[in-house]
Image 1: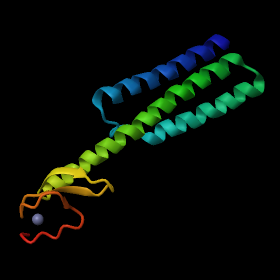
Image 2 (image 1 turned 180 degrees about the horizontal axis):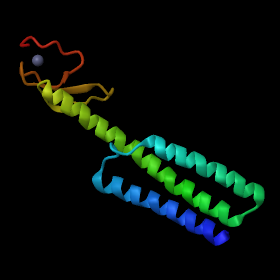
Image 3 (image 1 turned 135 degrees about the horizontal axis):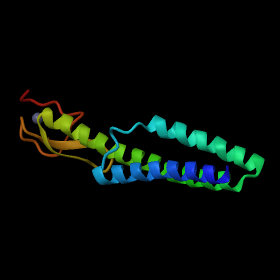
Image 4 (image 1 turned 90 degrees about the vertical axis):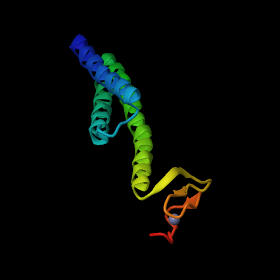
Length: 131
Ligand SMILES: [Zn+2]
């Protein structure tokens, strides 16, 4: 039983490690469901509580490892989601005719308008005279 638990624990951690490597390698988490990992961590937390209740060291250790690895996965999903959202936004503004898209100190999206030639305009507030 103890060995079986350890094998299950290691397998689940490996799944997380594979996912971490995949996100890191591709620099995007767009096609990875955050819900799946939240549910998984939630499940592991209950297994950990159960392990503590019955005093099973292997159950406690494997679930702590599992929760740690899966928390890294979740952190990476969130981290690489933000980046791809920004690039998705940049693509959207590029289609609208802006180049050199970035953000000012207050976080507003700025860019160069190709229609009127103005540089560093606040895209959300820019009422282009040429359109
Ligand atoms: Zn303009």
